[in-house]
Length: 327
Image 1 (cartoon, rainbow, N blue to C red):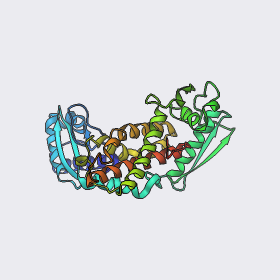
Image 2: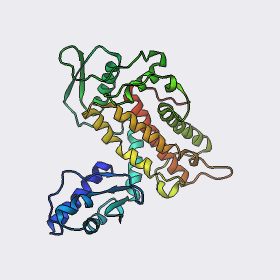
Image 3: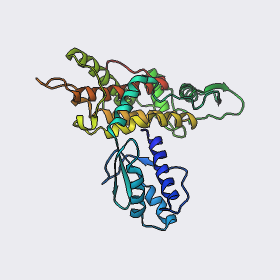
Image 4: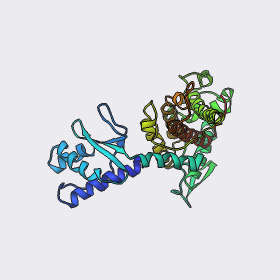
């Protein structure tokens, strides 16, 4: 279940509560769901009860309890807990997380692609400037991933004008140069320092490419040990908590759609950093240690790592950046 699907599920719970006369409010257009905050639990949390409390004329905790009862029986939802002043924390069922990983492995780097823009032609009019060219090229790829087609042209009324680079990024090399121009938001001036080439944690591009290369290395190493990936209950199977990674992977289709709709490849670049930072703590626990034999837990962790690798590879490809197998 993706955050978008869970948002719809929360709205359905609100609608049922309204239909049964438990709440007297207008059903909002959307419900914001995201990772639980401090003191929260589960896979996702929403503040919809606090949002509806005033118009409903009821305390937030009472609204949250009403919605909790409607959410608790939903297919794919394992547990619903109310914390703090009225935050609703939702834990997804094992089948949902296994299905997510299995779906990513099946679709590979095409995970998150859709036909949302099928038949649509997006005109990108850009100035003669290197950053505009790079942003337009990445946008054309992202728009194509959503079923649309971008037509890039110069002249006329410019509708895509990112802040130009302060200097020529070419000395960074093609991959680092593209990252330097795409990672900042279009209205921010990009920085072109040699830091983009440094292979250390302070460099977001290095973390993304390193995380991808490590997932590929784990697949090779697992094959040498005689086992392969098999999606399973990673939340019980892994020592590092995988919930942030599962959340980031589930959010990938929404990020791609938003990047295409808002002409913002920087959203995809920043999302790849989130995925990389979430998968790196998991990687040391994927392979058996010492005399330990490969188990279902190791196969489940490997499947989750491979799913993250597929998302990183697909995202880097859309940005026009190489995803190395070795680093």
